[in-house]
Amino acid sequence: MLLALDVGNTNVTIGVFQGAELGAHWRLRTIHDQTADEWGILLRNLFALAPLDFERIDGIIISSVVPPLDASLAAMAKEYFNTDAMFVTPETDTGLVIRYDNPREVGADRIVNGVAACHLYGTPCVVVDFGTAITFDAISAGAEYLGGLICPGIGISIEALFAKTARLPLVDFREPQRVIGKNTVGSMQSGLYYGAVGMIDGILERLFLELGPETRAVATGGQARLIVRGSRFLKTIDDDLTLKGLQLIWKRNQAQ
Image 1 (cartoon, one colour):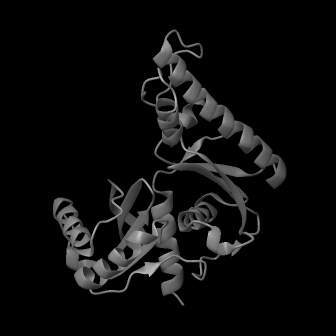
Image 2: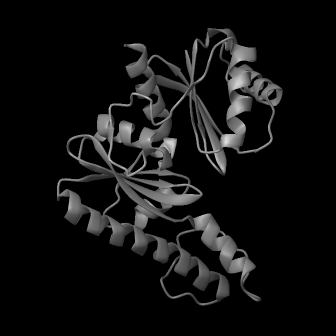
Image 3: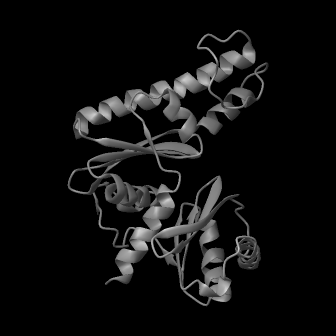
């Protein structure tokens, strides 16, 4: 079995694959100072609850954008699973040609998402990932990672409105009943929701012009389902896109 971890700034997504099938998955908060032992104990508990056999893990692959956690995760893999974790880096054979000016600047999760989108949905394609930041990643018809856009995440926008104003409350992100808000909370929720939908659709429209009308768009991440309900262009959701990409990269590298 393969253990796959996607370490983001806000959440860590964990998946266990039996072959190509995702048998179990969890989403946890990212704790930047978590130790190798804490990781090991946590994973043992999750496996016990699943239930899954901890001893059957024979491979670990990790995409991480939180460098302080990499050493702890590497130590956890060695101490608790007796294996070396494979970290996705610019040197990893992913099958994508990276056209970024400096490939080391691209987050590992963005490359992994591109791999999964290529294999599962075809090219050209755009991946929209709703995480701490909202990222757009463009993949050409020839499986080239062209680059993309990085925008403020919805959670960041909510926190900024609350922190930088004297009278605006902290609100939930939800689809409003109407565009015109009738009170402060409703106005904020409408602005946040339709502002995000408008940004997503506006950017996708420009990307489709650049990449071609046959371009597919795939959404993943926390608020994807809410946004897709209001979007004109974003219709496909894959909650497990990053984990699937990790499994595909692992399989590709084991076959060599």
